[in-house]
Image 1 (spheres, rainbow, N blue to C red):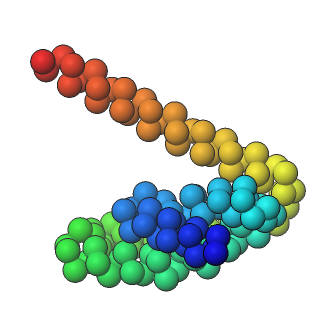
Image 2 (image 1 turned 90 degrees about the vertical axis):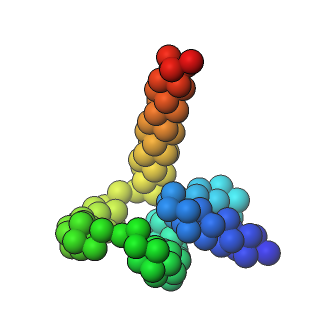
Image 3 (image 1 turned 90 degrees about the horizontal axis):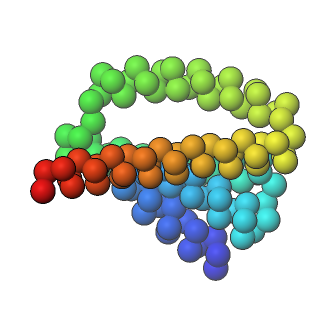
Length: 125
C-alpha cells in the first residue's frame, strides 16, 4: 500500500514541477528503509514515465522553451553519467548525508525567497 501512496504523492509533486523524485527518495529511505543507492536509482526509473506525462501536458499548454530544454537536456545527460559514476564510489551513509545537505540547501533557499517576497509585500502596504 505504501508504494501506491508514495507514487501518488510523488506523481502529484512531479506534475506540479517541483521535483517529486526528491520526495520519493525521502519517502523510500525513511519509511521503507531502502538503501540510499536503491532509493535514488528507483527514483530514476519513476522519473521517466512521470516526467513524460508532465512534459506532454506542458508542451500542449505551450509552457516549454524547446530550445532551452534541449540544451539543458543534452548537458543534463552528460552530468547524469558523471553523477552515476561518482555515486558508485560513495558509501550509502555518505550519499545519504549529501542528499540531506542538498534538501537543506533547497529548504533554506525557499525560506529565504519567501522571506524576501514577504518583505517586498510589506513595503508596498
